[in-house]
Amino acid sequence: MNGNPQTSAPTSQLTGMAAAMSDYYALAKPSIVWLILMSAVMGCYLAADGSLLSLPVLHALLATALLAAGTGALNQWSERDVDARMRRTVSRPIPAGRIQPRAALLYAGGLTLAGLAYLLVGVNALCFALGACTVLTYNFLYTPLKTRTWWSTAVGAFPGAVPPLMGWAAVRDSVALEVWVLYGILFLWQFPHFYAIAWMYREDYGRAGIRMLPVIEATGRATGRQIVASAALLIPVAMAPAWLGMVEPWYAVPAFLLGTAYLVCGIRLARDRRAASAKELLKASVLYLPVLYLFLLLAKP
Image 1 (tube, one colour):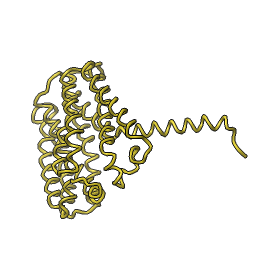
Image 2 (cartoon, helix red, strand yellow):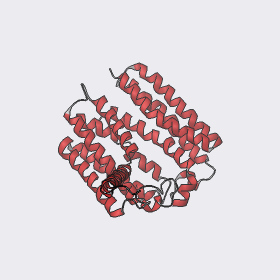
Image 3 (cartoon, rainbow, N blue to C red):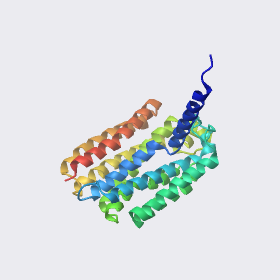
Image 4 (cartoon, helix red, strand yellow):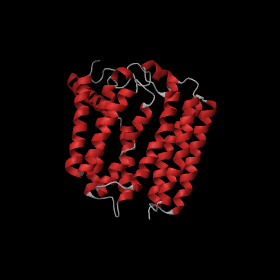
């Protein structure tokens, strides 16, 4: 027995709209947006003398969210051909054909321009400059370099660590030594995180022509050295807020323990170079940053 066509048509339309909204949401890379916002909040919190519940902070976070979403969508648009050759990304909205490239570009460009305009008008010129540099460096330097040189990982780490600077600048309209420590934490954290992903999917990356270190250096020795060096450097940098008086001295203890655990996972991958160790390191990286941020929140005087 056939259903009522008058009832099924609106239901089908609603289902299609929900699916389209889900695809556009995914195009903005929401997990990356949340990481960026979390890091920007830390910059705001450590720069603020009082409550974070202020209009400048709210404007900064909304503008940063727009900019991060636009940058993520623009990245997916520019890498649509690469994504189509990788098993882990072939089902993304553009390579799967659910969003057309032109529509994706308009969406990405609109979000990016809205975020930049919001930073300039609603926050301050320094935040706008930091945001503009991030967009340009990430999309027009880092992204093209991914198929040309393994140095792209280091290049991408520079714009990837900017969110705390934007949070701090939103509150103080300047940058200081303290916020560069936050920048250093996020900068160094990225190397074990992204190399763990690259080691797990190195065959996929190789198929797509992405020249990350685990792809071009099959033994994994150089990748292991990069992971261990960055994780080892991260320990004193992450402890520095206690030494600079940004937080209570006790913060140095959990920062040291977290960094040591992260380093141990990195050393394990560097030694055995197994997919299971890479997965373990990836899990450690995902836990490390929010837990460290939590201790920073708790330790602020």
